[in-house]
Image 1 (tube, protein in one colour):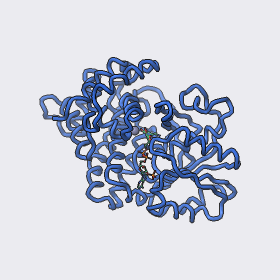
Image 2 (cartoon, rainbow, N blue to C red; image 1 turned 30 degrees about the vertical axis):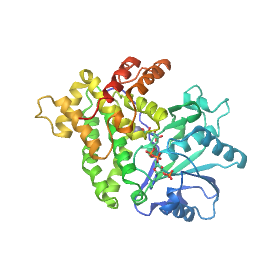
Image 3 (cartoon, rainbow, N blue to C red; image 1 turned 60 degrees about the horizontal axis):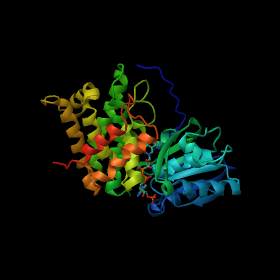
Image 4 (cartoon, rainbow, N blue to C red; image 1 turned 90 degrees about the horizontal axis):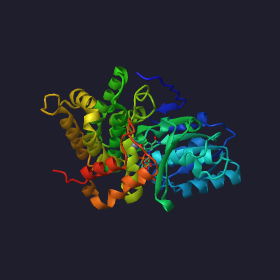
Length: 386
Ligand code: NZQ
Ligand code: ZN
């Protein structure tokens, strides 16, 4: 195992009816910006619960954070905070709203120039306002980590940043808030969480058997519970188990002391920025192609994954059987796994390798994924399914 530092200060409050605890969690004299998306929380009653729990606290609502939150929208929220001198942000929604809150609380305190530098990594976050989250979508793990992904549509960019200054102070996870999710978005959440685990598990490294088994536990649970959510969207225990899996998949624990890959995510972000496909859809396309392209390097872990998680240990080619079974799982959840499933022509993706190359990116656990390899990966993703 490698050396590591692990710090996770997020207070998780999990269960039915827990939104009421906002009253205990937010200081009474806070002036709160309540940050929300396009309106799902109004329809499913979450907004009413939040308003009731905030009682007479001074607050202002900010609607319109889009899926894949946009820099320009976030900056409008920053202006409101600055002009009204608000001192607390409450994110109410999915990963996009939580990610937006992380950028907003940092940008509101940023005094070293252009806040876009926070996202590109040119600027350092020295301070941030406090924020909490009421999560309504199990997927990203953003509720218990310090990462965020911000898009800037005006320049075709989608970039991640992280800072321990932007951990949520608390996150309320009430599985009932996720009953209203459309089936496809629930499925995307399961696939996103699954891929988060694989980004940390399917690399090569010094032995870390505890982290391996922790990762395998999450994968096995998602394989079991994921399809159930499509059948029974209002089964509390299914929703609760998926929600806790998604949080555990990216709260830093299974990534302790292991080499991590994340090339699938970085390539996927470019597909989303260029073609507008959902985050998890981009991952479902890139991951199988990447695993096939990088098979030699990942062979041992793929075989372990095939044997312990997918039950394909008897196959003639266990590594390939593991990738194939992963792809079948994504398709069972209703996600396309090839570019053609989203009407994206292969030629249209060829520039993505160059784009990442020009930014100087070398991806993967060994930094071996360069522009040429990205093009090979996307070439594989362009092959039709069966
Ligand atoms: O905007 P509203 O009306 O709220 O609708 C949202 C949105 O259209 C809807 N939704 C959310 N909760 C709902 C609901 N609809 C009905 N009932 C509910 N309870 O779902 C749609 C998608 O929401 P979004 O927040 O965009 O989805 P997700 O949670 O998957 O977040 C995706 C974003 O997170 C980033 C992605 O890149 C993407 O920008 N990621 C963040 C990570 C992190 N911070 O650690 C890691 C991830 O890998 C990921 O990259
Ligand atoms: Zn993801």
